[in-house]
Image (tube, rainbow, N blue to C red; front, side):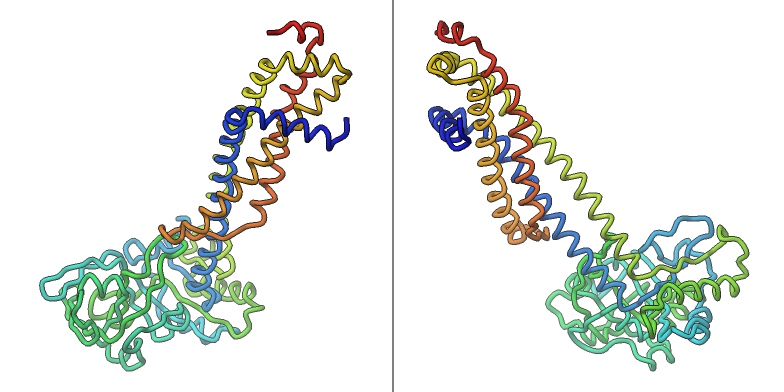
Length: 411
Protein backbone atom coordinates (compact mmCIF):
# COMPACT_ATOMS: atom_id res chain seq x y z
CA UNK A 1 0.00 0.00 0.00
CA UNK A 2 1.36 3.41 -0.93
CA UNK A 3 1.89 6.16 1.63
CA UNK A 4 -0.85 8.27 0.06
CA UNK A 5 -3.35 5.42 0.24
CA UNK A 6 -2.36 4.60 3.85
CA UNK A 7 -2.99 8.21 4.88
CA UNK A 8 -6.33 8.32 3.03
CA UNK A 9 -7.56 5.08 4.66
CA UNK A 10 -6.35 6.33 8.05
CA UNK A 11 -8.22 9.63 7.56
CA UNK A 12 -11.45 7.78 6.76
CA UNK A 13 -10.99 5.63 9.86
CA UNK A 14 -10.57 8.72 12.06
CA UNK A 15 -13.46 10.55 10.44
CA UNK A 16 -15.79 7.61 11.07
CA UNK A 17 -15.57 8.21 14.84
CA UNK A 18 -15.18 11.94 15.45
CA UNK A 19 -15.70 11.84 19.23
CA UNK A 20 -13.04 9.17 19.72
CA UNK A 21 -10.65 11.13 17.49
CA UNK A 22 -11.30 14.35 19.43
CA UNK A 23 -10.65 12.63 22.76
CA UNK A 24 -7.35 11.29 21.41
CA UNK A 25 -6.38 14.77 20.24
CA UNK A 26 -7.42 16.62 23.40
CA UNK A 27 -4.47 15.59 25.59
CA UNK A 28 -1.97 16.39 22.84
CA UNK A 29 -3.58 19.77 22.17
CA UNK A 30 -3.42 20.73 25.85
CA UNK A 31 0.17 19.51 26.19
CA UNK A 32 1.35 21.30 23.04
CA UNK A 33 -0.43 24.52 24.01
CA UNK A 34 1.16 24.38 27.46
CA UNK A 35 4.61 23.73 25.98
CA UNK A 36 4.23 26.61 23.51
CA UNK A 37 3.07 29.03 26.21
CA UNK A 38 5.88 27.99 28.56
CA UNK A 39 8.50 28.48 25.88
CA UNK A 40 7.01 31.85 24.91
CA UNK A 41 6.96 32.97 28.54
CA UNK A 42 10.49 31.64 28.99
CA UNK A 43 11.76 33.56 25.95
CA UNK A 44 9.88 36.69 27.01
CA UNK A 45 11.17 36.47 30.58
CA UNK A 46 14.68 35.91 29.31
CA UNK A 47 14.47 39.00 27.07
CA UNK A 48 12.97 41.08 29.88
CA UNK A 49 15.61 39.97 32.38
CA UNK A 50 18.34 40.77 29.87
CA UNK A 51 16.80 44.21 29.31
CA UNK A 52 16.60 44.90 33.04
CA UNK A 53 20.07 43.55 33.69
CA UNK A 54 21.46 45.68 30.87
CA UNK A 55 19.58 48.69 32.18
CA UNK A 56 20.89 48.07 35.67
CA UNK A 57 24.49 47.10 34.99
CA UNK A 58 25.87 47.58 31.51
CA UNK A 59 26.60 51.31 31.83
CA UNK A 60 28.76 50.30 34.79
CA UNK A 61 31.07 47.71 33.30
CA UNK A 62 32.27 46.51 36.72
CA UNK A 63 30.60 46.72 40.12
CA UNK A 64 32.51 46.19 43.35
CA UNK A 65 30.23 44.90 46.11
CA UNK A 66 31.03 44.80 49.83
CA UNK A 67 30.53 41.42 51.48
CA UNK A 68 31.42 39.56 54.64
CA UNK A 69 34.59 37.43 54.32
CA UNK A 70 33.79 33.76 53.78
CA UNK A 71 30.15 34.50 52.89
CA UNK A 72 28.84 33.83 49.37
CA UNK A 73 28.17 36.98 47.39
CA UNK A 74 24.51 37.67 46.56
CA UNK A 75 23.79 40.48 44.03
CA UNK A 76 21.29 42.90 45.48
CA UNK A 77 22.03 41.85 49.05
CA UNK A 78 24.24 44.85 49.79
CA UNK A 79 22.18 46.78 52.33
CA UNK A 80 24.45 48.35 54.96
CA UNK A 81 23.10 46.03 57.68
CA UNK A 82 25.64 43.28 58.17
CA UNK A 83 28.25 44.67 55.77
CA UNK A 84 31.87 45.00 56.87
CA UNK A 85 32.99 48.66 57.28
CA UNK A 86 35.88 48.16 54.88
CA UNK A 87 34.76 49.38 51.43
CA UNK A 88 35.05 53.17 51.55
CA UNK A 89 34.98 56.32 49.44
CA UNK A 90 38.80 56.30 49.65
CA UNK A 91 38.68 52.94 47.85
CA UNK A 92 36.43 54.47 45.20
CA UNK A 93 38.85 57.37 44.77
CA UNK A 94 41.83 54.99 44.57
CA UNK A 95 40.13 52.90 41.89
CA UNK A 96 39.42 56.03 39.85
CA UNK A 97 42.96 57.38 40.19
CA UNK A 98 45.15 54.26 40.15
CA UNK A 99 43.47 51.91 37.65
CA UNK A 100 44.31 53.44 34.30
CA UNK A 101 41.33 52.11 32.33
CA UNK A 102 38.73 53.44 34.81
CA UNK A 103 36.77 56.44 33.56
CA UNK A 104 34.37 56.87 36.50
CA UNK A 105 33.97 55.21 39.90
CA UNK A 106 30.67 56.03 41.61
CA UNK A 107 30.22 54.97 45.26
CA UNK A 108 26.84 54.16 46.82
CA UNK A 109 25.34 52.79 50.01
CA UNK A 110 21.92 51.18 50.57
CA UNK A 111 19.60 50.64 53.49
CA UNK A 112 16.50 48.49 53.22
CA UNK A 113 13.02 49.18 54.58
CA UNK A 114 13.39 52.81 55.63
CA UNK A 115 10.35 54.63 57.15
CA UNK A 116 9.09 57.70 55.29
CA UNK A 117 6.46 60.22 56.32
CA UNK A 118 4.61 63.06 54.59
CA UNK A 119 2.04 64.89 56.70
CA UNK A 120 -0.23 62.12 58.02
CA UNK A 121 0.87 59.52 55.46
CA UNK A 122 3.54 56.91 56.10
CA UNK A 123 5.31 54.51 53.77
CA UNK A 124 8.30 52.19 53.96
CA UNK A 125 10.82 52.64 51.17
CA UNK A 126 12.17 49.39 49.79
CA UNK A 127 15.61 51.01 49.67
CA UNK A 128 17.17 54.29 50.65
CA UNK A 129 20.14 54.95 48.37
CA UNK A 130 23.01 57.25 49.16
CA UNK A 131 24.68 57.97 45.83
CA UNK A 132 27.03 60.30 44.02
CA UNK A 133 26.01 62.39 41.02
CA UNK A 134 27.53 59.88 38.54
CA UNK A 135 24.99 57.31 39.71
CA UNK A 136 22.36 58.67 37.34
CA UNK A 137 24.36 57.71 34.24
CA UNK A 138 25.89 54.49 35.52
CA UNK A 139 22.55 53.11 36.69
CA UNK A 140 20.48 54.58 33.84
CA UNK A 141 18.06 56.73 35.83
CA UNK A 142 15.68 58.84 33.77
CA UNK A 143 14.04 61.85 35.40
CA UNK A 144 10.39 62.77 34.95
CA UNK A 145 10.77 66.08 36.77
CA UNK A 146 13.43 68.06 38.61
CA UNK A 147 17.14 67.26 38.65
CA UNK A 148 19.46 64.59 39.97
CA UNK A 149 21.97 64.93 42.81
CA UNK A 150 24.64 67.54 42.05
CA UNK A 151 28.21 68.22 43.19
CA UNK A 152 26.82 71.06 45.33
CA UNK A 153 24.42 68.64 47.06
CA UNK A 154 27.32 66.32 47.80
CA UNK A 155 29.58 69.09 49.04
CA UNK A 156 26.97 70.53 51.40
CA UNK A 157 25.40 67.22 52.45
CA UNK A 158 22.10 68.70 51.33
CA UNK A 159 18.84 67.27 52.65
CA UNK A 160 17.35 66.67 49.23
CA UNK A 161 15.99 63.49 47.68
CA UNK A 162 14.62 61.89 44.55
CA UNK A 163 11.63 59.58 44.77
CA UNK A 164 10.57 56.67 42.60
CA UNK A 165 6.97 56.29 41.29
CA UNK A 166 5.62 53.98 44.02
CA UNK A 167 6.90 56.30 46.74
CA UNK A 168 5.39 59.33 45.02
CA UNK A 169 2.03 57.61 44.66
CA UNK A 170 1.87 56.22 48.21
CA UNK A 171 3.11 59.32 50.01
CA UNK A 172 1.84 62.22 47.94
CA UNK A 173 -1.19 60.84 46.10
CA UNK A 174 -2.68 63.74 44.14
CA UNK A 175 -0.43 66.32 45.84
CA UNK A 176 2.51 67.84 44.01
CA UNK A 177 5.59 65.82 44.98
CA UNK A 178 8.27 68.06 43.48
CA UNK A 179 9.35 70.60 46.08
CA UNK A 180 7.42 68.91 48.90
CA UNK A 181 9.08 67.99 52.19
CA UNK A 182 9.03 64.43 53.46
CA UNK A 183 10.71 62.95 56.50
CA UNK A 184 13.27 60.15 56.26
CA UNK A 185 14.09 58.62 59.64
CA UNK A 186 12.31 61.69 61.05
CA UNK A 187 14.71 64.06 59.22
CA UNK A 188 13.15 66.52 56.73
CA UNK A 189 14.16 66.25 53.05
CA UNK A 190 13.01 68.31 50.09
CA UNK A 191 11.99 66.37 46.97
CA UNK A 192 14.10 67.73 44.12
CA UNK A 193 13.35 65.11 41.49
CA UNK A 194 11.02 62.32 40.36
CA UNK A 195 12.61 59.31 38.64
CA UNK A 196 10.90 57.23 35.98
CA UNK A 197 9.71 53.69 36.66
CA UNK A 198 12.30 50.96 36.15
CA UNK A 199 10.30 47.89 37.22
CA UNK A 200 11.82 44.87 38.92
CA UNK A 201 15.47 43.89 39.01
CA UNK A 202 16.72 40.47 37.83
CA UNK A 203 17.12 39.57 41.52
CA UNK A 204 13.44 40.19 42.16
CA UNK A 205 13.36 43.50 44.06
CA UNK A 206 11.58 46.62 42.80
CA UNK A 207 13.35 49.81 41.75
CA UNK A 208 10.14 51.78 42.04
CA UNK A 209 9.96 52.09 45.84
CA UNK A 210 13.41 53.65 46.21
CA UNK A 211 14.47 57.04 47.55
CA UNK A 212 17.83 58.48 46.48
CA UNK A 213 19.75 61.05 48.54
CA UNK A 214 23.32 62.43 48.36
CA UNK A 215 25.90 59.94 49.60
CA UNK A 216 27.39 62.45 52.01
CA UNK A 217 23.98 63.18 53.52
CA UNK A 218 23.32 59.47 53.99
CA UNK A 219 26.71 58.90 55.64
CA UNK A 220 27.04 62.03 57.79
CA UNK A 221 23.57 63.30 58.61
CA UNK A 222 21.50 60.12 58.84
CA UNK A 223 23.59 57.11 59.83
CA UNK A 224 27.09 58.36 60.68
CA UNK A 225 28.94 55.67 58.72
CA UNK A 226 32.07 55.73 56.60
CA UNK A 227 31.63 52.61 54.49
CA UNK A 228 29.88 51.70 51.23
CA UNK A 229 27.64 49.00 49.80
CA UNK A 230 29.12 49.13 46.32
CA UNK A 231 31.19 51.05 43.78
CA UNK A 232 29.99 51.21 40.17
CA UNK A 233 32.85 51.48 37.67
CA UNK A 234 32.73 52.65 34.04
CA UNK A 235 35.73 51.89 31.82
CA UNK A 236 37.38 53.84 29.03
CA UNK A 237 37.85 50.65 27.02
CA UNK A 238 35.21 47.97 27.82
CA UNK A 239 37.20 45.42 25.80
CA UNK A 240 39.70 45.38 28.69
CA UNK A 241 36.98 44.60 31.25
CA UNK A 242 38.44 41.43 32.73
CA UNK A 243 41.93 42.84 32.97
CA UNK A 244 40.58 45.98 34.66
CA UNK A 245 38.57 43.84 37.12
CA UNK A 246 41.76 41.98 38.00
CA UNK A 247 43.57 45.30 38.52
CA UNK A 248 40.78 46.55 40.80
CA UNK A 249 40.83 43.33 42.84
CA UNK A 250 44.60 43.52 43.20
CA UNK A 251 44.39 47.16 44.34
CA UNK A 252 41.67 46.49 46.92
CA UNK A 253 43.40 43.38 48.29
CA UNK A 254 46.48 45.49 48.86
CA UNK A 255 44.48 48.34 50.44
CA UNK A 256 42.54 45.95 52.70
CA UNK A 257 45.63 43.85 53.56
CA UNK A 258 44.04 40.64 52.30
CA UNK A 259 46.45 37.73 51.98
CA UNK A 260 44.05 34.80 51.50
CA UNK A 261 41.16 34.62 48.97
CA UNK A 262 38.75 33.41 51.67
CA UNK A 263 39.36 36.63 53.63
CA UNK A 264 38.24 38.85 50.76
CA UNK A 265 35.66 41.40 51.91
CA UNK A 266 34.52 42.51 48.47
CA UNK A 267 33.41 41.00 45.16
CA UNK A 268 34.17 42.55 41.78
CA UNK A 269 31.55 41.50 39.25
CA UNK A 270 31.46 42.18 35.51
CA UNK A 271 28.24 43.44 33.96
CA UNK A 272 28.22 40.67 31.36
CA UNK A 273 28.58 38.01 34.08
CA UNK A 274 25.65 39.45 36.03
CA UNK A 275 23.53 39.50 32.86
CA UNK A 276 24.46 35.87 32.18
CA UNK A 277 23.59 34.92 35.77
CA UNK A 278 20.13 36.44 35.32
CA UNK A 279 19.78 34.55 32.03
CA UNK A 280 20.74 31.24 33.69
CA UNK A 281 18.09 31.77 36.36
CA UNK A 282 15.34 32.30 33.78
CA UNK A 283 16.58 29.35 31.70
CA UNK A 284 16.45 27.00 34.71
CA UNK A 285 12.84 28.01 35.38
CA UNK A 286 11.93 27.54 31.71
CA UNK A 287 13.48 24.05 31.63
CA UNK A 288 11.58 23.05 34.77
CA UNK A 289 8.26 24.24 33.34
CA UNK A 290 9.01 22.60 29.99
CA UNK A 291 9.53 19.27 31.80
CA UNK A 292 6.09 19.68 33.38
CA UNK A 293 4.59 20.33 29.93
CA UNK A 294 6.46 17.33 28.50
CA UNK A 295 4.91 15.13 31.18
CA UNK A 296 1.46 16.29 30.07
CA UNK A 297 2.42 15.37 26.49
CA UNK A 298 3.43 11.87 27.59
CA UNK A 299 0.08 11.53 29.37
CA UNK A 300 -1.60 12.63 26.13
CA UNK A 301 0.37 9.99 24.24
CA UNK A 302 -0.75 7.30 26.67
CA UNK A 303 -4.35 8.40 26.12
CA UNK A 304 -3.86 8.10 22.35
CA UNK A 305 -2.43 4.59 22.73
CA UNK A 306 -5.22 3.37 25.01
CA UNK A 307 -8.02 4.77 22.84
CA UNK A 308 -6.42 3.27 19.74
CA UNK A 309 -6.16 -0.11 21.45
CA UNK A 310 -9.89 0.12 22.18
CA UNK A 311 -10.43 1.16 18.55
CA UNK A 312 -8.57 -1.92 17.34
CA UNK A 313 -10.80 -4.12 19.47
CA UNK A 314 -13.94 -2.42 18.14
CA UNK A 315 -12.77 -2.67 14.51
CA UNK A 316 -11.66 -6.30 14.56
CA UNK A 317 -14.19 -7.30 11.91
CA UNK A 318 -13.14 -4.42 9.65
CA UNK A 319 -9.53 -5.60 9.93
CA UNK A 320 -10.60 -9.20 9.12
CA UNK A 321 -12.46 -8.09 5.98
CA UNK A 322 -9.45 -6.05 4.80
CA UNK A 323 -7.17 -9.03 5.34
CA UNK A 324 -9.64 -11.32 3.52
CA UNK A 325 -9.62 -9.12 0.40
CA UNK A 326 -5.85 -9.08 0.18
CA UNK A 327 -4.47 -6.57 2.65
CA UNK A 328 -1.15 -7.65 4.13
CA UNK A 329 0.02 -7.24 7.69
CA UNK A 330 2.22 -4.30 6.71
CA UNK A 331 -0.85 -2.59 5.17
CA UNK A 332 -2.76 -2.87 8.45
CA UNK A 333 0.34 -1.73 10.34
CA UNK A 334 0.68 1.28 8.00
CA UNK A 335 -3.03 2.16 8.36
CA UNK A 336 -3.08 2.27 12.16
CA UNK A 337 0.37 3.82 12.34
CA UNK A 338 -0.83 6.55 9.98
CA UNK A 339 -3.91 7.10 12.18
CA UNK A 340 -1.71 7.66 15.24
CA UNK A 341 0.55 10.04 13.32
CA UNK A 342 -2.40 11.99 11.88
CA UNK A 343 -3.97 12.37 15.31
CA UNK A 344 -0.80 13.64 16.97
CA UNK A 345 0.36 15.89 14.10
CA UNK A 346 -3.05 17.56 13.70
CA UNK A 347 -3.42 17.86 17.48
CA UNK A 348 0.10 19.28 17.67
CA UNK A 349 -0.72 21.91 15.04
CA UNK A 350 -3.87 22.95 16.89
CA UNK A 351 -2.02 22.94 20.20
CA UNK A 352 0.72 25.24 18.87
CA UNK A 353 -1.86 27.55 17.30
CA UNK A 354 -3.77 27.76 20.57
CA UNK A 355 -0.53 28.25 22.51
CA UNK A 356 0.63 31.09 20.25
CA UNK A 357 -2.76 32.82 20.51
CA UNK A 358 -2.75 32.58 24.30
CA UNK A 359 0.89 33.72 24.43
CA UNK A 360 0.02 36.85 22.49
CA UNK A 361 -2.96 37.51 24.77
CA UNK A 362 -1.15 36.95 28.09
CA UNK A 363 0.66 40.34 28.21
CA UNK A 364 -2.69 42.10 27.66
CA UNK A 365 -4.18 40.67 30.87
CA UNK A 366 -1.16 39.86 33.05
CA UNK A 367 2.30 41.23 33.80
CA UNK A 368 3.93 38.28 32.04
CA UNK A 369 6.31 38.89 29.15
CA UNK A 370 6.13 36.57 26.17
CA UNK A 371 8.04 36.22 22.92
CA UNK A 372 7.22 34.02 19.93
CA UNK A 373 9.76 31.26 19.45
CA UNK A 374 10.32 29.19 16.31
CA UNK A 375 11.91 26.66 18.62
CA UNK A 376 8.45 25.98 20.04
CA UNK A 377 7.08 25.25 16.56
CA UNK A 378 10.01 22.98 15.70
CA UNK A 379 9.74 21.20 19.04
CA UNK A 380 5.99 20.75 18.55
CA UNK A 381 6.52 19.19 15.11
CA UNK A 382 9.19 16.80 16.37
CA UNK A 383 7.20 15.95 19.52
CA UNK A 384 4.02 15.27 17.54
CA UNK A 385 5.78 12.85 15.21
CA UNK A 386 7.64 11.20 18.08
CA UNK A 387 4.47 10.72 20.14
CA UNK A 388 2.63 9.34 17.12
CA UNK A 389 5.39 6.81 16.44
CA UNK A 390 6.06 5.79 20.04
CA UNK A 391 2.47 5.49 21.20
CA UNK A 392 1.04 4.31 17.88
CA UNK A 393 3.32 1.31 17.46
CA UNK A 394 1.61 -1.01 19.94
CA UNK A 395 -1.97 -0.50 18.64
CA UNK A 396 -0.75 -0.84 15.05
CA UNK A 397 1.13 -4.06 15.84
CA UNK A 398 -1.87 -5.52 17.63
CA UNK A 399 -4.08 -4.73 14.63
CA UNK A 400 -1.56 -6.24 12.18
CA UNK A 401 -1.16 -9.43 14.21
CA UNK A 402 -4.89 -10.25 14.34
CA UNK A 403 -5.75 -13.63 12.81
CA UNK A 404 -7.97 -12.85 9.77
CA UNK A 405 -10.25 -15.89 10.33
CA UNK A 406 -10.85 -15.04 14.00
CA UNK A 407 -11.27 -11.39 13.08
CA UNK A 408 -14.04 -12.23 10.58
CA UNK A 409 -15.88 -14.24 13.27
CA UNK A 410 -15.85 -11.25 15.66
CA UNK A 411 -19.16 -9.62 16.35
